[in-house]
Length: 289
Image (tube, rainbow, N blue to C red):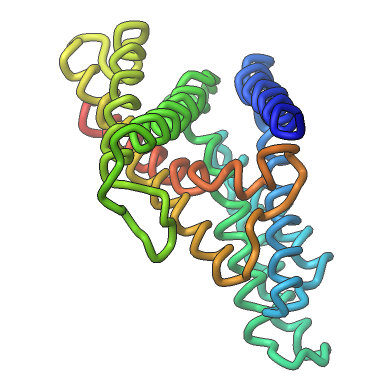
């Protein structure tokens, strides 16, 4: 009975999660930005809690909060094609002030405090801020076009990769991928996940000529490349989060998502997939111009 209850809870949470990730971006740019600001804040808060529990650093809540907002706002300004000089300067000065503030605190390990403060921004905040570059396009005249297609495609590829890796790995997985970090992951499952993600990319290429309206072949190749990029970096994101949890001696990063653990557990692949996708899309757009 308990197993069935846990499965039901996990299923309901998963469905709500998917509905939010797909539904909110369809409401428009403002809703999209608010959603990922909330995700960034919750993920940063969870990471701060883990760092504190590990005893590695105490981390100042005010500093982390101000830097989180500043990082997100600065990234938004840049994504919208607005001169970000002022916002960038404010963000840099907040980092400088954070460093100076540790002169007046009696931390046993001030370097750890500063390092983890920057780490929270780089790992838990910046990736979610960068996702705007997948959804926003600014032309030479400063006109802004918003489309949630690429962010949603990225999530579709992550989910396809995870599902394929789990199903195929469970069925025929034998060769361990990274036993020191994740004993259950196999090469067979990993390759299967990539294949399923690329099958999803093929469907996207039929439905959308986002990358190249003139050449269906180039459009398909670009979609397949994005799926491969998301799968590879998403897998590394999963492994890195597993490495950190092992180092900190925790099974789940949190419990905010019933049946699924914490924000880091749910977005571990996404944290690396977002910057990799942004870099990939910008390179492909440049090549296909």
